[in-house]
Length: 247
Image 1 (tube, rainbow, N blue to C red):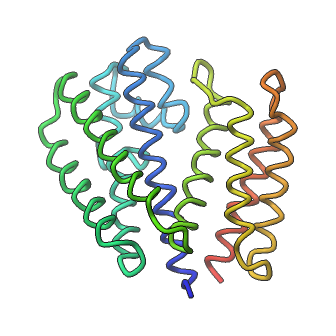
Image 2 (image 1 turned 120 degrees about the horizontal axis):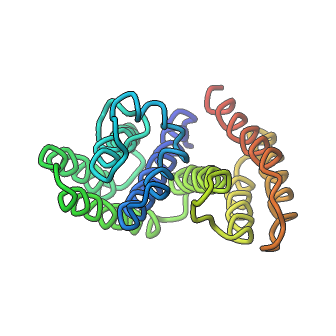
């Protein structure tokens, strides 16, 4: 039987890990374009424009990369990776030894790499290395036995994917997933949550069903998503998860 505190750590492991994946992909795409509009997308999606300009005078590749590396930015890659590692450490009794070692080694290597970052080529090399390393971790998660451990990690990943997709939809110039793809993520999330104990997770299951319904209404590519309704539904779902974890 999985303790709720452990389930919460696995859920947040999934969320922070997925957040790291999304952010490094976003930054590499922005670096490749390097136009002011493209460089501003990561700041818009993470809601950190004000924080950025409190620290930097100019928006360019170097300043953006440094901002999303520094530990004093709560949305940085460093912060996300540190949180992923902390949740992996907290669940070492549930995850495989290989998964823990890989995540811990990634964190240690990242700390070493960011002490030497300075130029554009340094940034690109470190972020590209991180993208490949995260894919290795994802491969271990994908190959994991489909048990309670994987279930909560994947729930976290799907919640984060949906949250990130909705942020992109609200951000001008951002590349967004197809509506049908978003609807499919909602269905996959429901499938994972519906397998949980219906007495304990009844509200979360209901909110998952609601999320599928509002997403499927917009599954046709030409349809406009009701962003306020969808975001509120996802928020209710995440609050219900938090309520059970805190029980």
